[in-house]
Length: 135
DNA sequence: GCCAACGTTGGC
DNA sequence: GCCAACGTTGGC
Image (tube, rainbow, N blue to C red):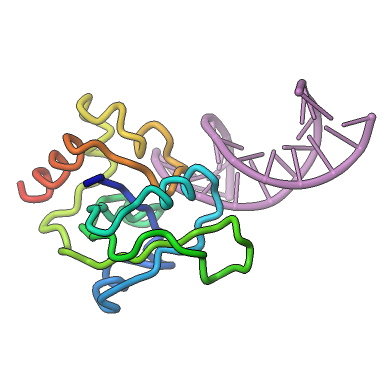
């Protein structure tokens, strides 16, 4: 079981959109590193949903429902998508500022490489963010 | 709105 | 293969 953090601009696709749909396709990724991370995802893996630009906070938890397949938004064979299902909205969103102010998260890819849209996250960081969301 | 960080492109 | 130019992302 691996843990991930996926970013989306909420005015393009928000966690509420995913809740409404019940299942979503995480597509449109056009970055090799992010693509490689998509390829490593397996059904059952858990992923945090982060709102970039607007909100700038971790807002939800989802599960990978389908392993990587050809990105349906392009014919270009280089790009992949995965299926995701919402698990729950976090009781309290966890802001990026909270993570940045805590040395425990200094190695978090979200903090270190803010532009990567699909990233792995350690179980320790994953658990800690969920704990913060319930505080 | 600005700008730093970063990835991609294309000329050489 | 290098690197300058350029475009995009995303935090501030």
